[in-house]
Image (cartoon, rainbow, N blue to C red; front, side):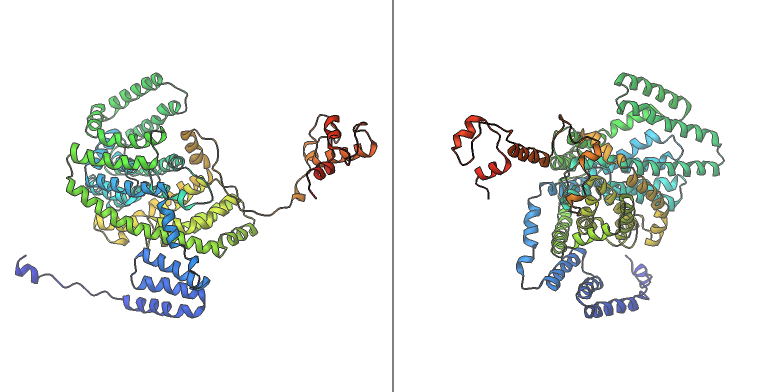
Length: 602
């Protein structure tokens, strides 16, 4: 840099207005400890935040402070950090997290994402708003092979943002769409939060593969909602450019007919031949009446063959029973390295080693958060907090739909203040027992939890995708918040569908897995005496003297006692004080008292 250039650079302006906020936070951190035990813990948390302590340090100090303040520092056995660390080491499923992160990072650096975009554009680029739709479905494809929302935003956003802006889409719409569609990464399996949820929810036995399958429905709904918004924006853009409305409506109708071709096949109503004929007719119609090119689709599919095979190999292997989620994660790393280094030649082995080092640093902080959060769960159990919450919710006499509405509101607020992994480790142990007590399916509850915190990726002040996109697109955080606001409203509509339409997630997931049995749950006791149970004969309308019916224990005892008094059991029966062989030889039916006395029961 020349001297003139160096001297022409203006000094950076000093930040204004931060000192009063800093002093207020410091005063709060110093004054809260005088408010009691809760104030001490709050002071620790706020003080750490003021000093800029990383998140894993805040959660760890919060856990230690809670144990020391409430349980006493002279109780070393109450600190389960070491036990929790060893317990996490026994969780085989946890190994899938760093492996999927590694494969996603490798693909984000390579060419898989660009080839997915080309294929999506060739397939749906002829629809109004098709270019924007291709970005959405490229995010879906990339999420299915990376499992990471921030990686999806970076990989797809870096290439699609300039293209969309150049095509006439507004900058705010472009940035909002790519940032929001990137959050689909935690709903489309394999998803890292879906891997961790069964580990955190200790009240139910949940298979990761079933949870994966349950994410397809909600992820598809969110993708279709985004695609519909892209179609509306595309039609409006064409109208502003003076294009007639008729062709846009016609192409939109053709796009809606596409699911009609495949749904009967997926539902078992049609065979391969019938679907092939319908698909051929459909392709001929759209190629003759639109600018769709089947040859271009084939060309882009050939160029992106290895990228398109990736999700099929991962998910098909899981649901086909070839390997479990952890083995699929290991396979994804090997596959990504082989494709990007030796087939696409987009990376070198030195680049791959650098990606692995970065992943190791991230995983280290993640494990600290997990151990500290699970230890905090132990503290909550020691203080009986989950049981008190269950009793409080039961005292409100909420219906399941009312509880889910309350949970959605709470989790949306939590998503504004915590990242998804920390929120899972803190709030799943609190809310899952209540959901079980109300009869809510734990898989359905897990999907609701993840969808809520997916929206949290887009809400300040800790929305991760906001910061990633702000850095990627080189725009201030305020611009990104305004950009994603309309898409948050769309996602709230999708959240309502997922919450109150369980078949969208749970039903589809079990249909894919061929499993009709609900997960085994440990429901906390909610009271209720045996005397409150209705009389069995009153419910069924059965009479007391039905000879062929099933008798109750009281009736059998009454008959035995009456038989003893009336002497109608067996005339040859001797007294119990006689020889034991007499009863055995005569085949006499002993009374309940005689059987207990013979067994030596007092």
